[in-house]
Image (tube, rainbow, N blue to C red; front, side):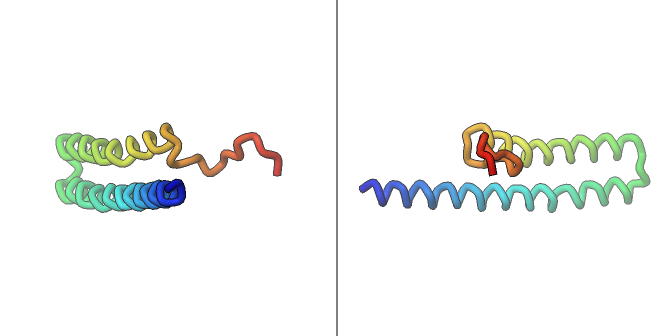
Length: 86
């Protein structure tokens, strides 16, 4: 029973990491057209404001899941060695 639960937990965490990576790619894919539209509009103040607002919303949709994943312990910072001496 414990083996099945451990396997299920491991698969769930792997799926969560895959979905997190897909969210990162989605954020990059959504930011491109926004920046291109700002460029094509001539860089007016209104276009820049709309682009900044859109890119900020996209960034929040990417950064917040990363922050939550780190907070609950699914994702650990790469530079952290947790007090271990190499």
